[in-house]
Image (cartoon, rainbow, N blue to C red; front, side):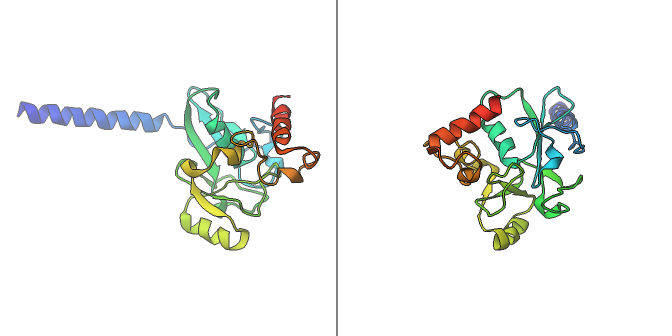
Length: 197
């Protein structure tokens, strides 16, 4: 009987810990007209395409990203600003349109699937990791926009951080003003300089 009681107490304690952990995860924030992109410090709502928000432990407001690829680059960054407690992305299938993602189209970025190498550019005019809550919706998107499907863990760091790997520019970078005349490694360095200025 004592053994059963100890097991029951342990199970209840574990369940309470799980509920506390879930209570600590913030819900997606509403994208307001004055939300600024973490890297670019530009108005997120002014740019088309899917968006992302990342919550850090102990911080009530999210870091905003005008392009999902930028948020994934932040996840790869070993020098983040704190512990990540929530990562949300636009579920592109539930978005009002490519230009207007909408307020209620958020999904867990860790569980989403991403379309890479499609013909759709992100909010900053760069290739995007286009997020979907369901694989079926991602496959439907592929029929029109091309690309390939990847889980978050399968998105190559070099896709979202062009300065990583062989130093080659991210696909589409040559289309950005002033980038076509630069060697690939120099273009990536120029992008980094823009972000730090």
